[in-house]
Image (cartoon, rainbow, N blue to C red; front, top):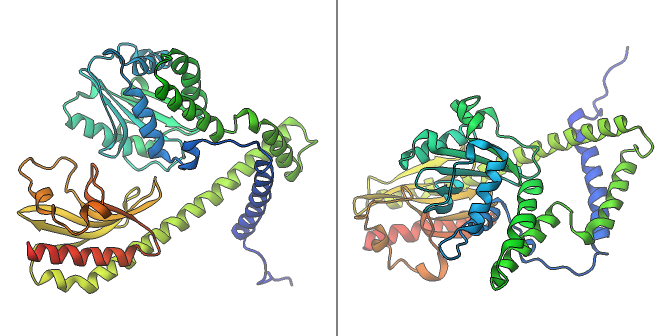
Length: 408
């Protein structure tokens, strides 16, 4: 009678090992070939642009204005009209363009319409009800549902928003008539090269430079630079060799490549799950330190309380819900998953606090406010930190906030 050996490899571990070996060998080849490339520098490459950076760059380009004319925005609206005739009546009148406000990557607001951009160039996972929430936020700004449009920007066109992300709008007239899926490789890059750059005035040297750098960055992102062509050919041959399909039929090659892509996706999902688990563990550790410290702020305020939002998909956090001068604020440490940053500080209860809010004035004299902290749409005070020192830095920061509130 045969029995299963205890040393038999788990199928999932075997898959991970095979995929890991495959990736290691390909990346070794990439490093080897990159070392042979001629010197090339791109500022955006060096800054390692994530999804938020791409949103800021694209949003800034759309804001460009000459003699009261938004030339790039007008060109972009023409591109949308080519993709979907329901967008053809959208004209530039008096637009305002924001990036990352209300968690919306880019938002164009004009007199009679608003366009929501959801940027997924890095293939970030869709949140449940994400698009539905964004539509609701824009309706709160005074737009009718019929005036709201959605753009979904993927890397190469293979990613679409999930049904869960659409929420109640999945399969609706909204999705059918006021939604376009664009991608950076075939739509944005072609538009920048063919329509935008040729029409920029020669004297706008800084704009030309910015567009050229962004085009070059996107070409590098998709391995389309001319200097990368020999490397790309060698990598293609190496992949075919590693998969043992060099001399197979086209059908066999496609089948094997699709299988490998599926395997890579499975391992990628496992890696994301592990990363997410480690992020939650980090926040739990920070929360435990707050629990140890809780009595320090309980001695002077019964209205302060610990809060924990570790299940939030894009911005998990822990901290304290606090009150000062009768207005609420939050002392948080938060993980910004899309940008892969950890920050802590004093967060606003909402991005547009009431005019009579005195918190900014109250924290004017906070120690090292100007030298150590920044502020933005969601934060009064904000500081970037790391996993190694974040918990201890945050605990010290809470200590300083409590002392400050006691003494002011």
